Every structure is written in C-alpha cells, then in structure tokens.
Image 1 (cartoon, rainbow, N blue to C red):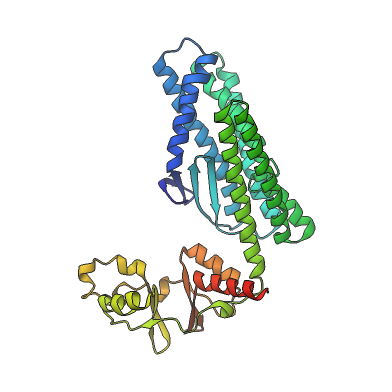
Image 2 (cartoon, rainbow, N blue to C red):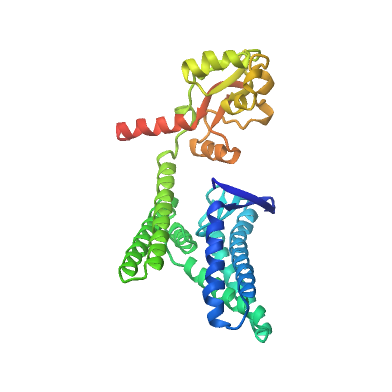
Length: 371
C-alpha cells in the first residue's frame, strides 16, 4: 500500500503502517482513555487512563496483525507469496501475491483470519478470568476479548472482500468450477452489503448520531470500491484467458547501443520521442534493460560521462517471458517482480517487449471490436 512506513518483517513479509493508522490509533486511544475506561473503571488517575488506553490500542492493532498473519501463514504454506501486510485506518490488509490455485486453498486462507481472531478472543478472555481482580490488567483484557470476537464475526459476513466473502467465493467456486463466476457472485454480494452499510450509516446520521453514521457509511464506501475492483480484476483475467504474450507484445520496441551516453539517450529518445523503456542489444541478443528509473538514479551533471551499459539492468537480474506464454501469467510475473515491462525471449533471441501499456492497448482494441 502506498504511503506506508515499514516497521519490520515477519517470515520475510514487510510489515507497514499506513499514515492513516496514526489517526485511528489516536482516536481509539482517546476513546478508551476518555470514555470507556472512566465509565467502567472510575477512580483512576488521568495518566493511568491514558497509559492503559494507549497500551490497549496497541494490543488491538497487534491482534489485527496476528489476524493477517493467520492468512499469510496459510498462504505461504501453499506457496503463495505475500508482498506485505499493512495496518491502516480500517484495520489491516495482507497483500497476497497471486490468486489461490483452487477453491480449497482459497477457503483455507480466508477462514484462517477469523479463526485466529476467535483464538485471540479466547486467549484474552482466559487472561481476564485469571486477572479480573487486578483492574489495570483485567480492563484491557475483557475489551480485547470482545473486540476480537467482534472482528471475527464481522469478517465472517459473506460479502467480498471480507473473509466471509472469500469463504463464500470458495464455496461458489467449488460448486461451479469457475473462478470468474465465483468472483462475480461474491463481488455482487459484497457490493449489496456495502450499499447496505452506506444506507444504514446515512439513516443513523439523520437520526442524530452523525459520527457513527459517517463512519459506517465510510466503511461501506471502502467495501464497495474493493468489491468492484476485485470484480474488474477477475473480468480482466477472464478477458485475457487463452491470450498469449505474442498477441500483445511490441515487436518494434526501441533498442539502443550499450555505449550510448545518457545525455544523448535523454535528448534523442526520451524528450524527442517520449520513450521510457529501452532494450540494450547486441546482434539480436539481449544485453540489458534500461528504464527512466535507472536514468534518474544518476545525477544529471554526470549524464554525459555515464553510458547505458553502466546503469542498465543485466539479463541475469531480469524477469523475462516467452512469446507463447500465457498473458495472464506474464502479468503475474510483472507483479511478482514489481516491474512494468518484460523482455520477450525466444531461446536467447530477443523478439519483443511486453509492457502494461501494451496489455491495456490490447484490451482496448478488443473492446472496440466487441470481442
């Protein structure tokens, strides 16, 4: 997720805090310290309320992180990469590197999160039973037990992209045998649920509870956008099913000499022709790939002294695809490598370049033809 701060790694997975997390952390801490704890446990000092509120809020987000790690652990056991986990204003999200290969894997990954939260609810509830005579410990434990139970039950609502929606998609996928149809059905269910949240939020706001109503409507808006985006992604996969890289790649991609200085490259190719990506070749053999990212990494005053082959990405560090490879698989390879382009090789011969722009152009052409 853009705009996040990496704070560490678990199982090699980057853990990040989105900037919106600091806002919601402050709001939860303030709500606990200024409302919930003084009402339930009167007589504490202000500093105690603030400290217990902040610690409880941190433990809550720790619980959200463990929830996402539950998903991630099952995904990793099924050889599905996790790009990162980000805590943000709505809780947390694990960025799964690719779609599950089967309905069974989808079900196990989806259900792992709510089961983890149920386990945490039991853990915090058991700790409360042991410490209920010590108010400073019992107060956060009972709140965390209830909030984790709520988190588990809320996520089991069968609306995509909630965990329950993914469980629902897995069930539909199992019975129909179609990932696309399952995603379509789960996405429609998710959007209906989202519009229900928005409508309920507006009704609550009109009845006077503006803060709670706006927050509920905001959650509905987020769920609706996420469900629609997931359906659009599934539709793209369905559209490109059976399409090969050769059908979308560019064969006349720009090629430059390895000894070309960067200042000439910028003047003659980037500024004059608007090109952003270049293949460095030698008699048809790929020597490297150069993008504006590598050019910008060199100080401008040195562009005249630095050659293309000094900053290009060499073949042994490049992801590449074959012309007959499935286009959806090629897009997945781009995502895994976090790049926007891939050289297309037939053996060791360079035959073209595939970029995200080429894929979008191919999709637009098919749409214009009504295919």
